[in-house]
Amino acid sequence: MNNSGIKLKLRTIIFGSDSPAGKLFDVLLFVAILISVALTMLTSVKPIRETHGGILFLLNAVFTAAFTVEYGLRLYCAEKPLRYARSFFGMVDLLAILPFYIGLFYVNARFLDVIKVLRMLRIFRVLKMAQYVGEADLLMNALIASRRKIGIFLAVVMTIVTVIGSLMYVIEGEANGFTSIPRSVYWAIVTLTTVGYGDISPNTPVGQALAAFIMIIGYSIIAVPTGIITAEIGISTAQQKHARSCKTCRHTDHDPDAKFCKHCGSLL
Image (tube, rainbow, N blue to C red):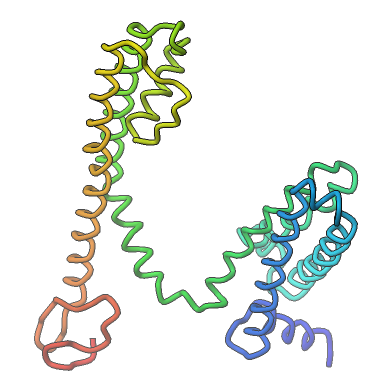
C-alpha cells in the first residue's frame, strides 16, 4: 500500500465514524479519555498520590504517549493538517497532551491534564447525536431571542442587590460582618438567589427584616428568566412547525423530525 493509501485508510478510521473500524476507534478513544481523566483526578488526592503516585504517573505517561501518537497521526492523515490543528478539536487534542510534558519540568502543571476532559465532547460522534442538532438549535435560538429581556432582567437584579447591599452596610455595619459595600452586595446576591451560605448574617431587627424581604423577592425573581426562555422556546417551536408545511395539503403543524405529513401522508 502506497503512502496515499495509508493516509486514506488512517483518515477513514480516525476521522470517520461510519465504518466498523472508525466506530471502534472512537469508542476506544472515548474509554481511554475517561480512564486518563480519572487517573488525573486520583493523582490530585494527596493520600492516593503518596501511596500510588508512581503507578499513577506511569499509567498517565502511557495514555499521554498514546494521545501524542494519535495527535501525530491526525496531523499526518488529515486532508488539511493546518486546518485541523487550528480547529477546536485540534487545539483541544494538543492541550490534552501538553500539560503532562510541561509537568515534567513544573510539577503542578500536571493537574492541568484534566483539560483533556474536553475531548469527551467527541461522544457526539460516538453516539451519533447529530440527530439532536435541531433541538440544540431550537434552544440556542430561544436564548438569542431572549437575550435583551434577560439583559434587562440582570440589570434590574444587579440594581436591586447593589441598593440592598448598600442599605445593609449602613444598617449592620462592620461590627456585624458587613465590612464593605462590595461584601454587603455579595451577601445580597447570596440571599437573593436563595443560596444562603451563612458566612454573613444580619443581627439587628431592621437588618433581619430587610433580609426577609430580599428572601421573598428572591423566590419570585428566580422564575422570571425561566419564564422568558420557555416562552421563546414555544415561539421558536411554533415557527419551526409552521415552516414545515406540506406541499400537498398545506398543513403546517408537523413535528420537527417528521418525514411525512400527518394529515395526507405526503413526503415533507
